[in-house]
Length: 162
Length: 118
Image (tube, rainbow over all chains, first blue to last red; front, top):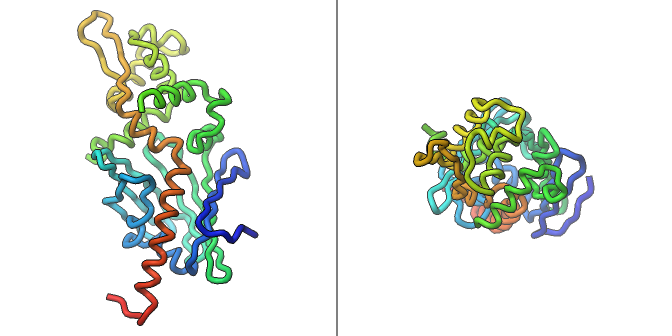
């Protein structure tokens, strides 16, 4: 698979109804990148999303069938837990895992592929959702198309609240 | 219990159901009784009450005590936290990857110079 070679840019694509593909090129060999994604010593140092969030708990049992669990905490004290299990662990090339935000939230299957060329590593993460509506809610597209009217209204509500 | 302290996860779980999102949308227009909330759905009062209990546990719905019909009202505060996550997929990865760029340079610098690690 050919990807761009520009670092510092994240690209997003929706190759099917239920998928989001996130691609990023970083300036490091894939051995190091794989470590950064799978070693609990490294993960809380960067995989924390927007400013104000930290990851006080990071548990990783890196083997097929092993589980992972991240607890995120915001500076106002609110917390959320993401967890799942590993399906395929092929360092430093490939990692397939499941991810869920809670028992009733749709579980996704995340496939990470690392390819290395000229010292740069392309990180391709494919997130596969159980339904298109779930994907669109995550990507914030489609809601304005009336795909899920009630959620769209809720979205408007959130805008007025925030 | 982890689930109890996990307010954001509880909110996400509550929002994961389309009926509950519709109930919240209705309550955004004003307080309503269980009977009024049941009307748009082909669902019994007890079934709607069950959804309402989930929403109450997540802190999204309050139960009035003053009136006999015990109106339910929306408490939108938990939605603020959710708004920062739901639909923030891009922001999450953009922010994380910006941090990763810097972090990868750090760990490589620690690894490489003399191959000395603590």
